[in-house]
Image (cartoon, rainbow, N blue to C red; front, side):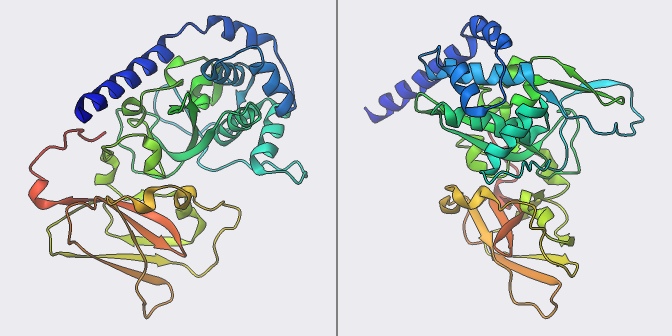
Length: 350
C-alpha cells in the first residue's frame, strides 16, 4: 500500500511539473512588457495582483525581469576562439550599496531597478525581492555554472547565482539570468534573447550545468558528481574568503577502501579573511545532518599557515567530504569506495 501511494505521489508530481512547463503563459508574457517600476514592493503588486495562482505570479515576476533587465557588461575577455553565444556570468559579485539601511536583497533590488542592469547575483536578488513582496517563498542559490556542457572546466568553483521557488508546496529551480539573453564572444555584447528552458527546469536537467554549493538545492535524492571532480575539488563560495595558496589532494575524486585513513592539507598565506564576502549559507540547510556528508575540522599543526585533516573511512554511506576552515566549508571532495568503482553509478557523471 505504501509503495502504491509513493508511486501515485511521484506520478502526480511529474504531472504537475509537466503542466507547469507546458502551460500557456503568453497572456502574462505580453502583459508584463508594458509594466515599469523602480520600487520592488509596488512593482511586485503590479505584477502579481491580477493573478490568483502562484505559478502565474511567479511567471509574471520571472518574465518581467527577463524583459526589462539587461546583463551588466564588463570589458570583453581576450578569446582566441571564434565568436559564439553562451550564457555568461561574472566570477565575482557586484557591490550594491545605496546607502540605505536595508537588507542586502532589498538594496540590490532597488539598485537593479534603478539601473535596469545586473549580473547574476542582482538578477537572483531582484527575483527574490519581488517574490517576498508577493508572499511567495524563494531562495537565492549559489554554485557552479557550466557555460559550455561539452567542456570540462578546470576552474571548478562557485561562480553563479540562481533561484529556487516554492509553488503549491513544491520547490522548483529557475535561472532568470540565463533566461534573459546571451553574451556574444569575443565582443562582450549582451544579446537579449528569452530562453524558456530555464523556467522551472527539471532538477535532473538543471544539475548538468548548475551545481549548487548546498547540494540540498539540487532537489535530487541521488547526487551525481560532475566530471570536473576528476581534475580538482569543488571550491565552495567561502574558498575565496581566505588566502589559500595550495591544497592536497589536487584531484576532487578520492578512491579509498574501508579501513583507509585519508589525509588532506590546506596551505594559506598570512592574512585575514575577506569580510566583503558573505557567510556560506550551507550551514543554514539540512546538509549537516545528511549521512552522505562529512565535515572535516583541521587537526592541530606545527605551522600556522598549514592545516591538516584526517578522515578514517569506516562506512560506505559517506560520499561527500567538506574541508572546514575557520568554520567555513572551503573545499568539497567526492569519495568513492573502491569495491564500487567498477560499477557505473546509475545516474552517471555530468
